[in-house]
Image (tube, rainbow, N blue to C red; front, top):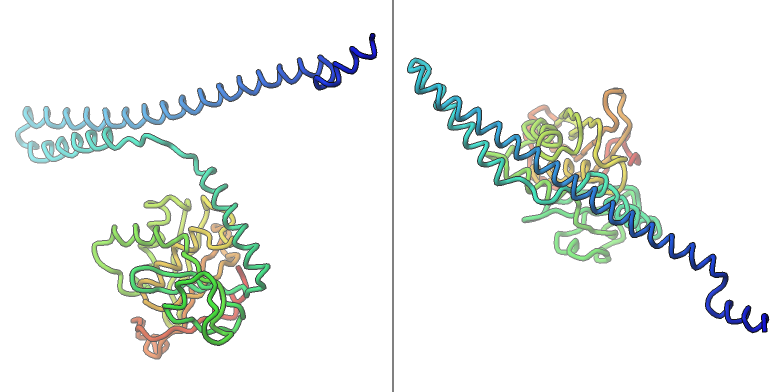
Length: 314
């Protein structure tokens, strides 16, 4: 009799104590999920409240300035201008409050997973360590050549992911760089095209910090005679900066390539300056007028290898 009972217990899945533990665990998981949802909602509410408090503060300052303009005729012009600005900023901030807030660590985790996958593909294909950003009409491509000594493929050959046309030096992997949409946003904010690396670099460093908030600090240096733009960055949101097609380095490379209209070889090296975490180096083969000290870029076809001191560092 007892043997049959034991058999029935086993058929139902084991000791009743285990079933009770599993049920208790399921209840705990459900409670934790509910608490997690509550915390996310509380976080969103807190962020909305902060935005709206900022909007109210702007509006209050603007209203006070407008009111002051009625009582202080001598400063009326300034006060009315300040009041109008405050009210406008308040209304804009209130109605543009984001509905969804995504922590930076989520974007970093998603990027790192994709970067690791692509890096694995590059490794299994035994491609070189070169990263070449090639500008095209309306976009740009990241070309990973098969060999360290390479030629940049024709634009139409970069349409496919696996570049197999042409000679061996033109074969490799072609991808859409992560920095392309960022570069397009950056270009949309410019009142006019930078035209050359010297005018582009400081704007780009400022955009990394203020516009995109990808880094805490950035400083650019241009050496047109050697064909190089270097950007030192500190406090990157996406770390490490030398990972495959990191958005920070990719934005710099795509923006330089599109401005100069020539292929750019990208390297990320450790900086000598301890204030920065990484040094993003964009290199190109300088034209004769740049090497002579003119400094203005040309549209000549660029070479594709980085300078010796950054060669192979990624």
